[in-house]
Length: 510
Ligand SMILES: Nc1nc2c(c(=O)[nH]1)N[C@H]1C(S)=C(S)[C@@H](COP(=O)(O)O)O[C@H]1N2
Ligand SMILES: [Mo]
Image 1: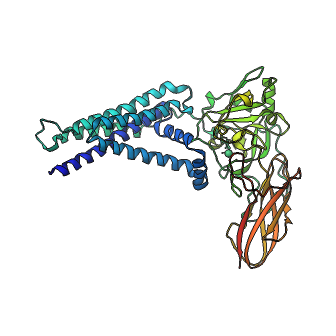
Image 2: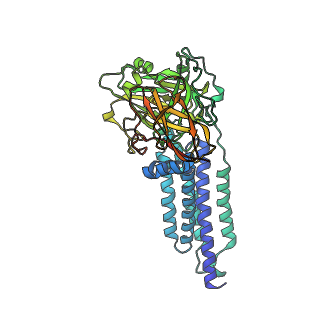
Image 3: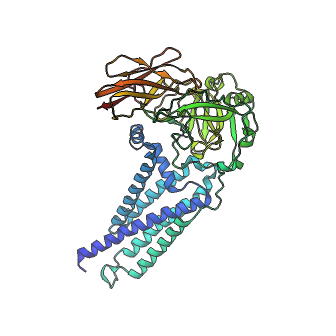
């Protein structure tokens, strides 16, 4: 072997060593974490990455990748880690100390992410085992392999590499990694919503009035099915909750702190309401909103039972995954139907939408009012805390803005001249929609026909019949609410408190 080819071979073996030790370390950490039912290194690092991503990048990711944003983020983190461990091995073939230091820093960061992960809850001590396993295999394994790779003074073969010993070390480390990768959780303690049967509501929702919507292909149905319901949250892994352990606590500025089990909630008089939930990240024309029939108890009843003290003006809600929201107390206690929810469209909440318990508060964007996997309502003062998204630059107060959307025709549709039905939805939760107007190009605004109102807490369908003439046309919509406010044409971004502007679609008639 020539000098350069032996250096190249050693470098190659170095890269392999970094990959093997780093990769097996992560797998061992994952395996032990699964066994102990704590958050493993991949999700913990991903969660930190979601947390630390600057807001403009986050918005760009949501806009560009939609709900695949987090998957792409985790993929990016994995690729980066893979490159880093290979690079460390490559360096290690020349400089063992630097490589080991680098690997120690890398697994140190992953360990820190695991220790601070909010989903670890009380189980922090149990995290120490997967952390130790990961560090041992990644750093110890790399040290072992690099030691065997290092040229020795007394070597009789070229480069001094004892192939047999190196292969033995490599296969032992790979075996540990494989064992980690193959480990399945034993407990699997989380409750499946399918095992729950919900009582009938004492106060059912009024039946859906005839004529709330129109039979127009492409028009959003009045009620969004659970599988079609948009999902927005910061959780990389849907939190899985065990009902036996579940309690909802009402704490803070109250006379009688409460602890309610899931059963306690089901045993109360349940109310059922249709409410259109909306995300602050909904762009003009976007689909981050949905309308469901929610089953739960009035938030105001629980707060009254706990006895809210003078001076409080907010409720800080907490989720099992560490998410928090700040909701004005008056919104939770006035006569709108703010609910602590257990059911969605006749079923227990799906895990993605907050099983077992979430908030639904009409009129406010989700990030200040709709905490999923809810564990605590702390009665407090806005002056005394800031919530997850307010810490990241979003507004403390976030009522849903009056808005409207064209569902059909779609953008860049090609249409035949003649009669075209334009249709969509408009929403102004807790105020109600009074009027929707549409215009084509520079023609004047025309009143659309409104669907029958369900309630002021839900969106409202509209349609407008257009005599389409050949050419390119821009169709535009605006709504007016029951308070007489006309939707503003001013284009605002989603941050800090929701987008504004008129939705338009451009169509070609030919
Ligand atoms: N625990 C938790 N609850 C959460 C969130 C979250 O990130 N974590 N996101 C909120 C936001 S921004 C919105 S818009 C709604 C969305 O509820 P959905 O996913 O059921 O549509 O949930 C809210 N509740
Ligand atoms: Mo949201």
